[in-house]
Length: 196
View 1 (cartoon, rainbow, N blue to C red):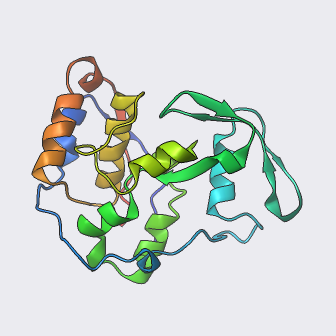
View 2 (cartoon, rainbow, N blue to C red):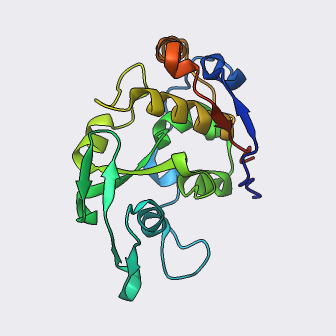
C-alpha cells in the first residue's frame, strides 16, 4: 500500500471538516484482531510503538539493545512530562473501533495494518499518559475530549479521518464544528496526504 508522506497544502477552515462525509456509524463486527499489532515495518529492530517514542521524545532519544528507548515525553492531553516510557501509551488518534465503524470494515487486512501502524503522518499515533488514553477508550469527540489541547485534538482528529477517507456521524460533526470555530477555526493547518 503506498502512503503519501508529504503534506504541502494548508487550509484555514478546519470547521469545514475537509469535506468528510457524514454517515451513521456501522455497528458490530469489530474485533481488535482485525487490525495488526505493532510491527517493525522497516526491519530496523524497532516496532511502531518504539518508533513513535523515538520521534516524539522532546530530548534526543537513545536506543539501546532490542530497541529499548530512553528519552523524555510530553502528553498534550494532560500536560504530563515523563522519562518513564512505560507510563505512556501510543494512542491511535482515531481509535481502531471508531475507524472500523467509520469505513475500515471494508478495507483489506493490509490496509488495516497500515492504519494501525501509520508512521507517515505524526498525528495518527500520539504518545500520551496511559490512564488518560484508557479513559478515552474507543470514544469519538462527541463522547470524550482531553482536558487540555482541545483545539489541537479536534484538528488532528479531522486530519486523520481525512487522510484515511473515514466518515463521521452527525453528533461527531456537531461537536467538531463547535470546537473548530473562532480562533481555533482560524488556525492554518496542513491537509495531510491521502493514505489510500
